[in-house]
Length: 557
Image (tube, rainbow, N blue to C red):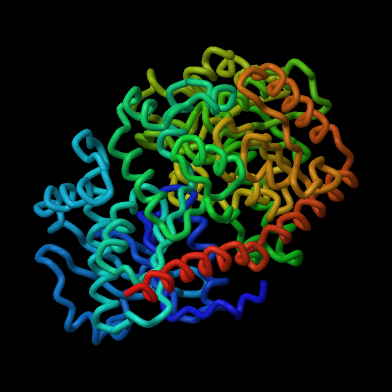
């Protein structure tokens, strides 16, 4: 498709993760922004929640009072809704509106009633973050309405794109109040599908028999599910991020997505070749130092370092498989030392003082710290699934035993440069790894393996991830071809997945330097194929679909 054939006057994209790093959607939006700016310079306006204070400001946002000043000076927003306008501090520097939505709480019952009458959204069973998400989404819809009215955009090509169920109420408001605006709804993962998996139920073997409404009632998810389903059906264009999730949407939301929009990645984030060696050395020294000070081991420069990372979803993200595979790898006696990291943020309390004291010391103490499996204390040590499994597998004793060749370390914190132990950003840590593994059970896309190969680090993922499915569809699976191994995973082959992952890691650990360099190059080449410059075409198709639907409505009025 010729991207220039889609003429847009303005596109709003609303998400809870605009300037608010919570999960993978932040990565989607923040890496896509530059490509959108190149196509539609300053015609894209991101809308996010203003959940920040003077004591806790957003480092991603810079207020620019001159942007949209005429609208802002004349905007008549309901009491309790205010906005700040500026730029998102990411490549492309797109326009952002942060919306403070406190005033919507006193109006929510009115809008919940309207949404029941118009779209059959059941808000009676709401709990948790439902009200907060809906109040933000409604406020965002009101802001979009205000801008469209001010700029008199009735006969212009305007789109409003909403991400995930948390913004569904904003899409429904836009369809109600602004019928001439084309709407797009993207579900990055269905709320009910994630809940089925999170409750330990088999999703894939029984997918054909699941009814979304029935499962929502069983799992106490009626409000979120009904909102997500209503948004999916009301949208002019319904999209999701992979064929895996498209099948899930068709079964559980009862609408097949119009377009699958795979998540691309922004090129140029990995260090250039002239700086790559130094970046790798710095990261490895930091990781090996943490391992040494925690376990008392003396790790050589040739230590094989592998990690898993991502959202703290023990089963969905395959953290259980990773830990069991590392235990299996230990039994396979790899030819060199292996240091495995679980880089997954949990309910962290603080860095371990005995560890930070040792790191700050002279490095002469060569004994293991008590229970040398975690770098930080957590608030719920008895309930943390990762800690509990590491204890069950005996990793505390393994880590303290100098004769063991495999050690495992849990870092239950965000790697944002301020964790108190490693004090590095995640992207600064990646170059120091020799491999990553993400044996996910529920993974609509999978940014973590894509990020890994962008840095030339080979990875293992599964056929149940969207990214894994894309690799298979391109017929480039296997380390030699793409730097990616895709392990076939089902509801019933857990043990096989564990064994296969352990074998793959053993192959990498024992590989020659030439082979590792070859698969590292293959990994970087694959990442280039998945950059936004290539994947943005899917979004352009979605834009056209939504604009065509809005044009038809206009022609009828």
